[in-house]
Length: 410
Image (cartoon, rainbow, N blue to C red; front, side, top):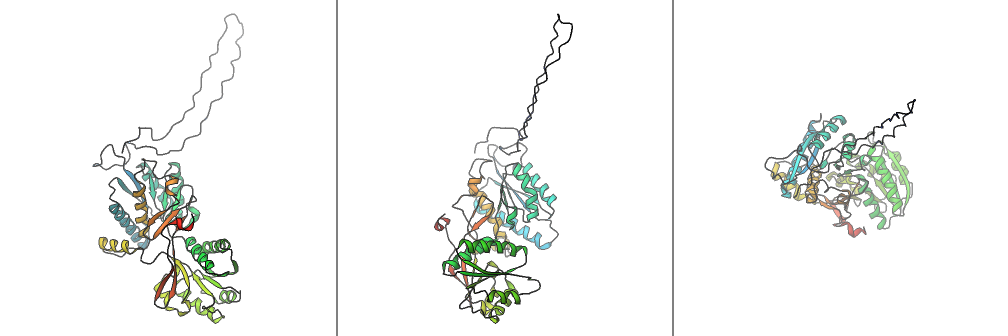
């Protein structure tokens, strides 16, 4: 790959003022008043766009001089105060290295930086990577850290593939490569409506997750041309579900969307039955929180539907990770694998012009560990999800995950 013509790392603009000569006429006895100096044109500072390889950028000694490596910054919470978070960061880094090995691209250079959980430290980590010539940044995990690094990356024209699920931090160069509940809600509501269900009620926890889910639920039902019979919020920590369950049972709905998992989900189903909900006539719906082997232990959830990645889609990745590192990968490790795989896919483009808005928001999307996905211009992610049914023996696919976005008319 040829190296672009050398240029200064930062564009510097300066204003030039012209001196005005005062001419004194010998025949005059008075000195004329000098004309006013012309106004100085002030130019706004140019953004510090990274446009070409620079001598001070990080480079491996064995890389040919004519090569411009694909410098990829990775910000993960390696020094977080939580041991679980540190373990997650290390697992994600291993998955990133595994993806780089699988890609076979020797021009991709992974450069790491630490996010301790402090936004200030995250910003410092981003600045370090930018100073080293990162063309794209993967991470951070936490939304506050994403907010901290976004202005720095944006100023340099460097996109960010963050692992946060908080859609409020997406956009303007930040793309969320994560599992977002909006995709699950949209998929399950659209599928239920396609099967003839018209009146939707919901039981949603009083949590930030619940706030996001409620908004998505209302939008999805409206988009499906259906009706919202009732929406009840409940306090999950108190387990206060009796009154909300009684309310939705009386709403005349033909579906009840329950955005809850675990033991509380298994307690909601009998409560609804006590209030007169017949699960053979009223369809129970859920999110990926239902994807738990314990869910099938509650008979009254049998027949319910929920959206999740296609079962076994990540088997190959999990097996490769186990064989390589001798441990089971956490679910989020697959995000780091997909991030580096996407970078390697786009790497053949022109240096410092490969990770463009058009490239990242390709409407055809990309294939990842957990199925197809694509980014929208607002930084959100859309995933191809399956619809699963709860059966006494496990989960059954009732609507497979799409293998292409073109099938959905996009």
